[in-house]
Length: 426
Ligand SMILES: [Zn+2]
Image 1: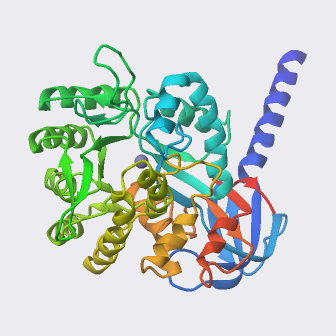
Image 2 (image 1 turned 180 degrees about the vertical axis):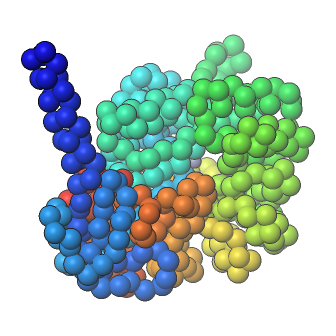
């Protein structure tokens, strides 16, 4: 009897204790708040957080709340990077890439990925879409699982697992035909095989299907960036149809004329890089809500290295990219913030992309919205992410400056909260 009474008492104590953690109220006092909805910030705002969600925005902290004071900071919605590679450590040259696939085991690369995930979160990216593991199999699914289980710190993740490309199109290339080398993608040829690969990747945890739609770039005399499309339109259509049938989305690496056109025709959900996009295709993208993820900074970053390696086209591509970006803005295409972090070293803050977007014609507010509101929509999570308003998840970051005056302040995030949990404090 006594034993039972003790157990009842113990359970009651445990429940009340759990109840307390679940209802713990945090009051975040911000010098100003850019909530992601309008163009200008509001000053002296207290964000009230309860149970991992934003409960209210007011002018004073409720009684008994844990107060976090950031009187000289601008608070913003948690940032979302919609194009990362946490399994990659920078690949300016072919040798950099081959070295990682040939000399690092997937297990070792996964250990490095956990460090990159933590870096992403500390830079202020509370959510990332990781668009393929570059030869590390399904390791992204495991990193995501470890983050969701609270084993390692990291952003909320949507993952694309292995990506798809056709025979002869994706590294590693150039080895003797009798030498078996790993590839950075799952190689598929023909609509049926492509469909099977989509099913396989989804069954192993892919949120997105990533395809490489073009390669081998050259600038034509009329200034158009030309390419060799990888998949046939039939193959691309099969991939998109299968993914959509299974309620998944397709991200297409497409940098130039034909790759973009085929992807748009096949009905993909996002165009990655899009250095050149024809006006006709921009019109279709705007009409169908296809996202444009321009990844400007990485292009600037790798250009010199790749030019030195004998591919000067990468330098010319920057100007073409700027022109496309400005035309996309005018056409009303939804532009989502994405960096290709991992394509450059994770020690470089991917938030440099904000300055690149502003250089290409966005206002700081537009650039920040591309990494919050628009990116949340690309995630399909616009109801819970992307703005600071009651009912949304408490993903909040802060910078000790005014990013609307100088957007490079986005590289100085020193406060990070994800779903109400603080990961970084000034
Ligand atoms: Zn990429």
